[in-house]
Length: 129
Ligand SMILES: [Zn+2]
Image (cartoon, rainbow, N blue to C red; front, side):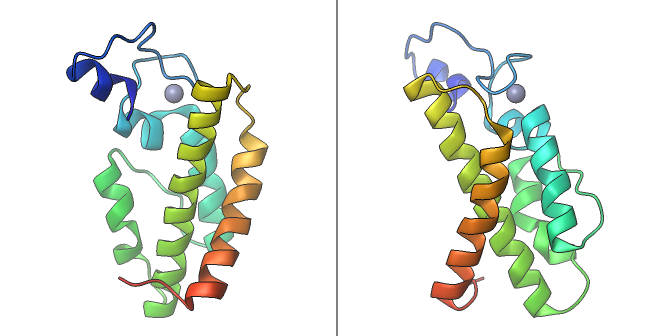
């Protein structure tokens, strides 16, 4: 759970700051869309997916992103897998920063995203939409 969600459940949090950038309070929407780390990640996802720049303001925007991609259902499925891989890798990296006191390493999110996406598509044969 993000820090704002824990605080809403009366869990004592030492810092409400985003562990990735430290600039603002951590929320789901900030972590996955507003954070500078997320912004870098979405730029790379757009390049990898060969789609227009990604401007998202909520997780709901991310979940629906593939629906507006041109190029047919196969391309939409690929983008869907790429976005979910990116979200998963960003969340894993965030947890490593919080739980293991690891420094933020954007390159590892980027490399893990492409590896995870390739693995997912190869072994699932696509994405269930
Ligand atoms: Zn942040």
